[in-house]
Image 1 (tube, rainbow, N blue to C red):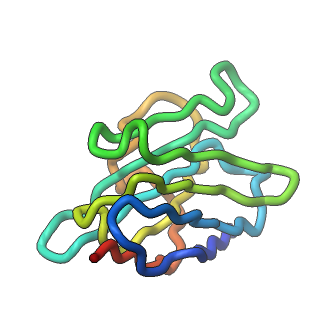
Image 2 (tube, rainbow, N blue to C red):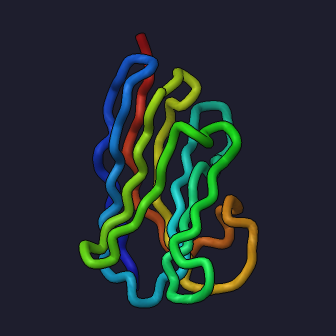
Length: 129
């Protein structure tokens, strides 16, 4: 069983930054971590993913076009922590942000939520002047 807990959300002005943290109970069986967001009136959207397994491409990162160059995902396995750094925030980045963990290795659509096995409770990000 894996438990995830997000923190670090808040309210910022456009152009501001936030650091979201996902604390992971155990990383032993996880191959992928990802962050999704859910904004009012929109479907859940994958924004960043990272391969944390020991195979080829370990720590490769993937970003949605809408956040590439502004968001950075990283993993610290020793601290059982995944970080999503949000820079140059825009009002359209507003939403509830969730971290997610996938147990299986292999190729798949990293931004398809149905491929992830465990989810946190979410942390709210609001970007408003």
